[in-house]
Image (cartoon, rainbow, N blue to C red):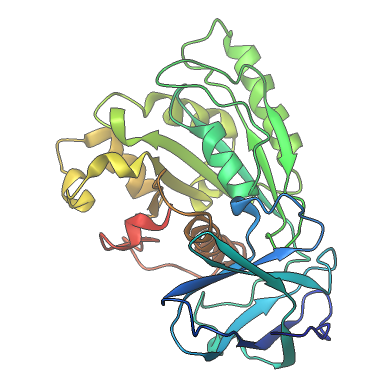
Length: 323
């Protein structure tokens, strides 16, 4: 049994929602999970889940979580409680009150969903740029390939669609390092990327696959840095993004960043040590959380807040499971 009262929150406002669930579990085993979907998501795709509370192990459970509301998000939601093959669909009762950014546990800043972040993805073919772009947007819009097959042959720009997801514009780019591009064509291509990412980019992600991190992935980076024009501005917005992190197994990834990988370490030095590891096997909720963590770094870069040397987005094996 549950009821629904529309939260009184406005675009860009941070609010604490207190949700109370009263479910008869007399014939049910615990635990069970609660997922919240937009009302218009009739298919209830798991990748569009707005939040997940797990486990709920009491007959009456009150869960508190911080949210930032997007003007495009419906003020009513469908609550789905899943247990084994049975499903209970209802509404939830909620109340709102102001919340300070430091009270939030999901990230250390208030993410304003009215601000659009522009992210440029660069790297070799087969590194996973298109897949990463889809993760950042929360939907599948870029065509994905496999291994070292090049799918992206022309720069493509796409945007997220709100519905509880941060506003992000992603520019997916081709690998011109091994192409037939002339030097002049490469310059024109980079200028086109800048135009598509305008007024940004807010961040430049050099995408490197963990499966081929020992290969020479960094010539394209040096080439792009030279063509960019303002190398200081380029490096200030640079983050190295490793994909296929699930291939690392139980290996401590920081040990992989050994001195023998001179090209990689020089690139990380240019990026002031900023890198992030994406796990392809992570859940949608974990992926969204990692996107928010990434945007935290992007916001700090835009605000010109100096990061200490070797500051990294993730620095423990547990964090590597976020994407």
